[in-house]
Image (cartoon, rainbow, N blue to C red; front, top):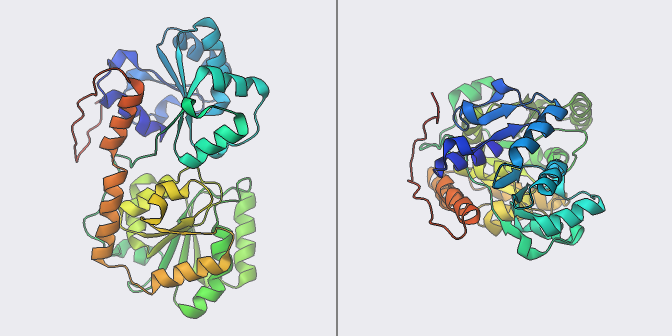
Length: 368
């Protein structure tokens, strides 16, 4: 999302030399020219001291500093001390800002920062946990990446059917998530636990669980799959690159991720853009992405019976071109890049003219 946001800044028409994008952990070679021009990007390869020094040096000469993570708040604190007029904006995505923070951070957030929250849920967590006034928070829902491939047809891709040894009429469940031993809240455990019951109802059902897993989590998942006796019914795909996402969503009958701690859930709108039926949790930021249930089914993410029922009902109504187009159109209407640009424009220049941003179907790189 940080790449997309960076692209927004350049598409808004600001002077190119006036925008700097700094990343503490990316390398210079990690820059993608679709989003950020070479002259505006600095990757510090994890060298924290260099990142902080350069960010402070540039920040005190800037009108606006935008942080993509609350852990960077100490940089903003230094900048604000040296340049009190600099405007500080904190982009709040989800779990990173729901944790306990020190008193000085709470005070600094409340008195010196604007917060852009990706969902109402995250905003309420910030207010309740950190005492930040509602007036300091603006809601900025995520949008679709302008480079995401939006399909016009919805047939299952033959190459993926072959790769995963699936048949065209075989029902497929799909989850795309971080598979981390430190973040066990995405809901894929509940899906795995539900599979034996679902397979009795749909004997050829197959579950694709995608995402790069750390070694400990991969071992835990494999042990769980073996214990449930569903080894033949589950594929751990590993990491899927961005350019392969759309075809995986086309392969899918139901995208399911009953998460408990989703700040927003960009993957939900990516799935919807490909016309997927979707099942998500109702206790975090997922309802914002799923339009309070208009774009997908919301369930209690800890209720296996509710999950089995939702999947069963979805699979009993096979995905059609018409249903896929309805889901896709609703998603594009509510989460398109053009709307996102206008929202950022309104917040960055509240008393100025709204930038004239053309609605384009094709986005070209901003540098050669």
